[in-house]
Length: 65
Image (cartoon, rainbow, N blue to C red):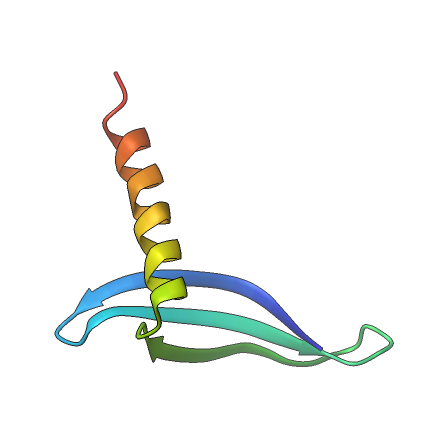
């Protein structure tokens, strides 16, 4: 099983990119691999909408007070 340990939304020349890290554990909870990294360019509408919503929440928090 893969367990998400972190992710980031990155703005680059290709648009938005999601980069994430995860650990791999077996059915008994034994750690098989850690800090695996993968990335992908956001292309589908559902993910674009989710990223835009998250960015808006962060901007709202950033501009409080």
